[in-house]
Length: 590
Image 1 (cartoon, rainbow, N blue to C red):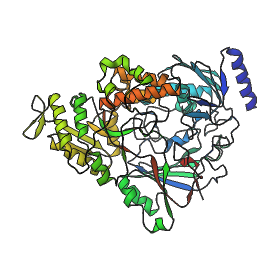
Image 2: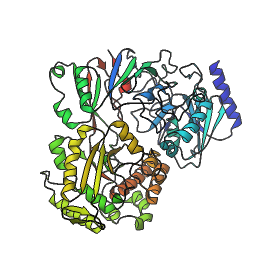
Image 3: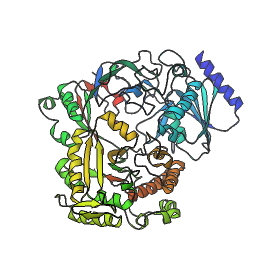
Image 4: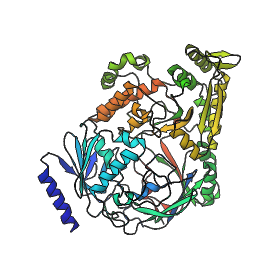
């Protein structure tokens, strides 16, 4: 009966709409999907993996809400697993989406709208069907009450209409946002009948209702939370899900910092660990448990662009408003010494917001990239056009006198002078910088940098706060500098508005931590979003990258092209991980 209803709905749509469009099982940014409509499972899964057992992950800090869609509160780790999205990714492809809640998707050649045709069997955990009205309700709810990045993501959506119980159409301002149909495919669908009875803007621990493979099991407020596999999960037999979601119970235990979590892992309380500390990876993963094969370690290749991690300036602070000041402060970070003395030489210095990819700006601008930049020549630093961007190298012995001299010269041009050992402005006020962090073990990395800043008369403070306070201050832009990261995919698009867009700069909770307000960058972000071919996307991304780099909005840190993982022997995994993720949802317990 449900199949008949689906066919009837699609037939009615065909009569109601004369627009020409193509119907498909998948969406891709450029080219064709790698998997045909009749694919049986994703290429990197074990389709016969058993569904059983329990895995426990670590999480840092605490949690106080099960609502991950709003700015308020600290959402519980793993809560996203209770929700299904319209479409799901194949992590072997740079940017593709395959039907999940949506069985098929309709798209015209000009990409001016997209229609999602829902699966009639899709159900929320309480048995209610997932309908087009739920999709419309979710969209409006996120736009009106959700975190600011939703408004940036969906800014080009003009209208959304439920055309039938199982079909929903999104119309766009124009067809220039090629990524938008795929971005909408990532939309988690919330139950209208549930949220009409609850306050969506309230950050609390009311158990939410979803339609995904897991549902909330147990929780200890702020300390632990677990999810159990839904026995009658509506989508368990779909090709996109076969060989995934294999573990019966997924739990998270919270710890105050990473070092405590590491000890919990080695004691057997935690089953899996993604290690981010080069020191711990070099020194802590050894001993009888490792030698006997009870704990395994591995480096998984990561083919994603590495994005940018760095000391992030809050340019809303007047002290950081000048590019020369930001450059000067960056000169005092001695990466070469830090890498050898603290990281065992493990890392590569990051010199691009799209590091380790073809999207990174290199050499001098040319071709399509140069064509994009030239109209803004009068608004950009001359170096954008006549110098390849390259960070200065130190000798690595801790002696940075050449960098100190250059920094002081830049600061003098900006109105700062060194007086009696203090760097002061025209009013005699000393420059002061507070670096806000939440991981105690990161102090050992930040403190050598602040000592270098102190050598040229800058007053510094490293403020370590708990995770809740950190999130609250960052969301309100209440910081001088933080250690921040801007993750990137192989197909960047709408998220760039959230990172650098002028409209996001004054919205509390946005990802424009820097406070970037640049009409040039807004135009280049628009070019990235509107790129109609891979070549055009590469040109636009390189142009954006080059302007960001020469603006010195961050002090770049480092990157690594692998995931360092450790796990107990009870966990098993397929013969390979996908290209663009560790593929943890394909693991199982033996």
